[in-house]
Figure 1 (spheres, helix red, strand yellow):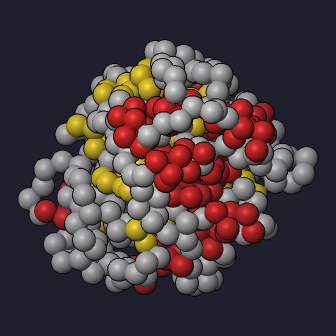
Figure 2 (cartoon, one colour):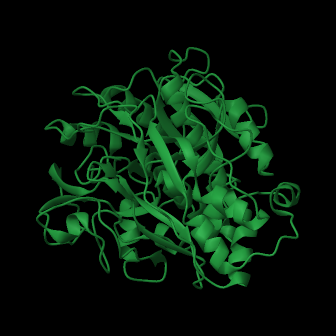
Length: 454
């Protein structure tokens, strides 16, 4: 992480909705509510509204947000989370709901969570990435591990609230779906609690639930945010049998990274994902590891096109947006063939990360909001992609699954993101979206599972 002052609010760009009235209304009904009761409660109305009115309303989406309490610039040898929490304004989701009901949108009050979701939910995520059928039928028996620092005492209870609201099946310690351990595998001797990392943990758990509802979830809590402890937690996750491991954190690159690669992230047969970062153009570690799938971030907007969604590079300012870049230390893997970077290039793929088009999260621990929050940052996109890998099935035992999207490059298995940038750079594709591969979004976002299987 580089130089942003932690906990400073930022303003997102505007977000537009276009298309026919019928398409707009259909998209609005798919508002992220997982059950008929919640869908009806949120959207039932006799109000008639034109596509133009909806577009005008949604274009008003305008939010303020801050780094999560775990996002302060870390000292050398430590990592920060890549999570941003909306603290004010109206999200795209809220504007859609208001337009459908014909009412003025509610406003998120600074530093206050809400009683109901204000961001995208499971239906949205599954629809946007062609996962609706797979999320219903696949993932049973697979375990997605989440690696974070410190303890979230309310993790299981908050997960239960999220899943209950959206009509997802129970995922508890008692039924074997959820487990929480320390970096040594202990279920009783856990790290000290931390409210900032608790918000990150809730975001990660909820994104696994949204993307792969049938998956088991393993939360491994490192005793601190040091590179060594987080890496030890990754090893523990793999030791405990997880074939999919998400890491929503990062820090500055260093000459130690190649050692960390072999010590912590080199696990054949395991899909390991890492956030590309939230500070715009520039490389982070462990996203720079050649053994992980580096995940960038997008702005996800509903559309009248056949997909129903469009995406562009997430960028708020020159210092805030998805990370990308050419590693200074990590060797280029054989399957990565872009010619402008002689070492490892970030990112490989991407998913939603813009707070203005952010995701709903339920978190009840500490000062980062008690109740429903909207989060963005590449901390959202990393667990989404790890869960897509899980839906696609267990990787080959000798594979490094970061290669899988490259095997599907240029096909309909990935949504190519071709607009936007995350800053200025001397080699255009390092920071600017273009047809095919680019740094901010890699080869694009999932369209089903075919790009995430060997």
